[in-house]
Length: 156
Ligand code: 4NP
View 1 (cartoon, rainbow, N blue to C red):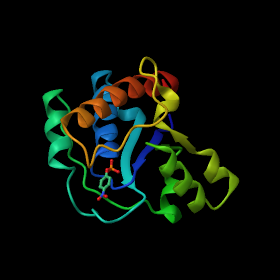
View 2: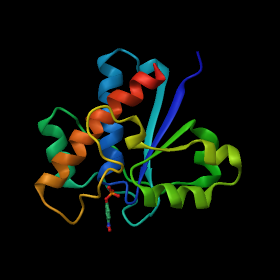
View 3: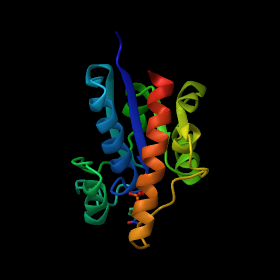
View 4: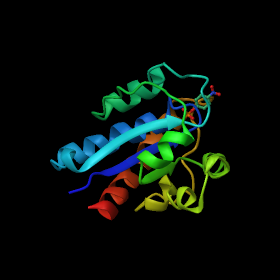
């Protein structure tokens, strides 16, 4: 069976999208579905390229059992639109930036938003936690755990 290829995208690829990647991978592994998915994350901006996830995000995630190991990289339209089937943005600004980079209607059709898959939490974006406190990181994880569950149901 062809693998489902999913790319999570935020601005810096050090807080929200590496957390989405970690939470989604955890849920996929929990169900023994590793063979069925290719999962990665990227940022629309490259200022943190080469860095691990933000220490605060890592610490909050680890408390819930999610080990964030990804290294930040910038989204590459020439490669990523072809390589992935689902390009899952964290907020409306990420969606606009991705749409601006799209080369075709087929590229645009791959772009969606994490909160499209929400089940319980009624948010329309995953808010950027970078300039805030602990509660922002906890909220990101609450929203991601919920939406990852919905995304996995949709794709399974
Ligand atoms: P992320 O968070 O997009 O969830 O990775 C941010 C990371 C860095 C910055 C902003 C948001 N920054 O301005 O450096």
